[in-house]
Image (cartoon, rainbow, N blue to C red):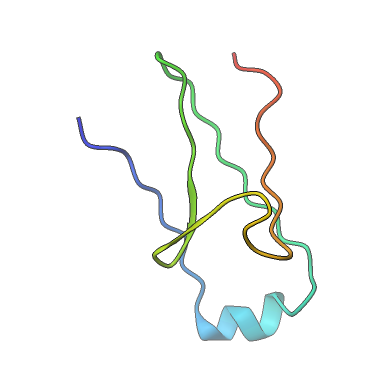
Length: 65
């Protein structure tokens, strides 16, 4: 099976009105699967990981349902 992909787009207008430098933005992804899901976060084509980009923090879920 192909890996599912979810893409979030933000327009230039939204960026100017709602988001700005040093503002905290939370993105949350929830899935229930068997076998357990493995998440990966990307900015453009770059994979984000804890400590790879200043200002990015990735929290793993504490439990699964």
